Amino acid sequence: MRLVSLIASGESRRAFTATMLSARPLTAHAELVREGGEAEKIYVLLEGWAGRYRTTRDGRRQIVGLALPGDVANLDSLAFARPGFGVRMLTSGMTTSIGCDAARALAASDLEISHAITRLGLLENAILSEWALGLGRKSAEQRLAHLLCELAVRVVGSTDGPITFELPLTQEQLADVLGLTPVHVNRMLRQLRGKGQVETAGRRMRIVDPEGLRALAEFDPAYLHLEPACREPQRPRPSGNGVF
Amino acid sequence: MRLVSLIASGESRRAFTATMLSARPLTAHAELVREGGEAEKIYVLLEGWAGRYRTTRDGRRQIVGLALPGDVANLDSLAFARPGFGVRMLTSGMTTSIGCDAARALAASDLEISHAITRLGLLENAILSEWALGLGRKSAEQRLAHLLCELAVRVVGSTDGPITFELPLTQEQLADVLGLTPVHVNRMLRQLRGKGQVETAGRRMRIVDPEGLRALAEFDPAYLHLEPACREPQRPRPSGNGVF
DNA sequence: CGGTTCGTTGAGGCCCATCAATCTATGTGG
DNA sequence: CCACATAGATTGATGGGCCTCAACGAACCG
Image 1: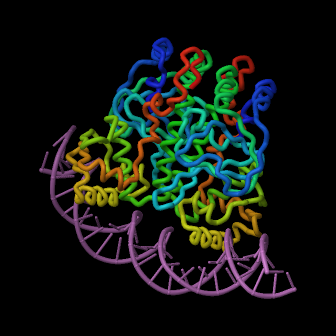
Image 2: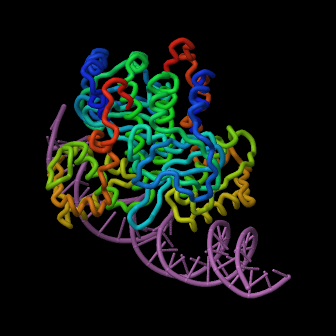
Image 3: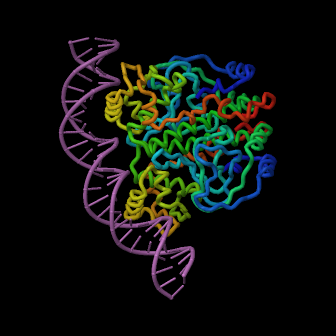
């Protein structure tokens, strides 16, 4: 999730970006955090997508979080030395990083950064809850449709009107997000194409019928908590004490 | 999760408990937060269990978080006016509450409380990630076994040796956690009983073969992040600046 | 005792996994 | 430039895990 964008004041943002280490290019499948291992840095994606995942003993993988450019890939490392899940690049890309100690020190000295981190953690929670609803209670087709809606919003900012956006995930990676097999993801994509709701061309995804897709998926973007100013009208940001 | 227990210093804890409102008894199924509604208080359970849930349009329910006595039921209300999911009692019980504004003010003035809240949010994240792994990639039997292990740890603190504990959830509520139907939960319970791994008597659950159950579920309590002192040996709490 | 909630069990069917094969890039070295 | 290897997309056949529908028993309670 966009950590930096949650830091409103320029001063806090400068303090944060000033502590970032140098950028590093990464190939697809590069491991940022080993599953069960430790991390002494948090990674901020500059380019490419990363995924937080857990695996079963027999190698089945479940992706439990997607990090897009601007997002923090392993926020949990701030609170736990061993976050318990792995983080790896899903595409090639570029990251910058911040030492956990440095980030903790920043949070301790800057209320606004501290609140941004808290809010971010709870936002990831909201997204994961939505995924859990899908994993537990929705059909494969609905889950796929829902993920496409979510990614459209996260990539281009809305689902109003037909949208084309870059979806760099393989069908296998989509399957690991949706709790399905790659084969079935393929069939569900075909089904959505057949209904005229999406079109695909290589890595480009086009949502032809956003209305229909949202209805099918029961997608309501409220859980992404965009534009907090709009959604919390009765609590306009108090500029002085900046509480959340 | 245990918010109060994460606040180490007596002073901060006193400040926190001092702002708690009076306790209120609640019947089973009482709604603490309406799904899609707002909440201006966060609820701390004193007795009984509560569940965070989301529902689909046709009424299928998925529970995305369990709150046991001592846990905060709707931490997310601190960051978002509309958390997006509902919270209701799964048993009868008792809660106390804290106004969100008061809690935010506390967090702004007390670093330790602020960090406890952040850590708590990330802990819920870790638990939900583990649930997502189960929902997406494990069998019904494994999921049930895993939940029983988790609850044993959360209720009595460990899974070493045979354990008996109070499990006040109906099979329907278990089904809503596990993404199954009540009928299938019943069959899986029977299956575990048949293997001699658990015994049930009314609301009491006895784990006869913890080792076998953990192996079946691939349960590793690390994700619950108990005893942070043990798990982060190289970062003993700095008493002065108390960073996380 | 009638009503309600919860647990239990059976029969049948569908959604999605599994296994397997083909096809299309894309890249790589000779 | 071609032979070959690899990754990913696509499609078919088959089976199983879990859902659905249905009924009944058990415990509790006003």
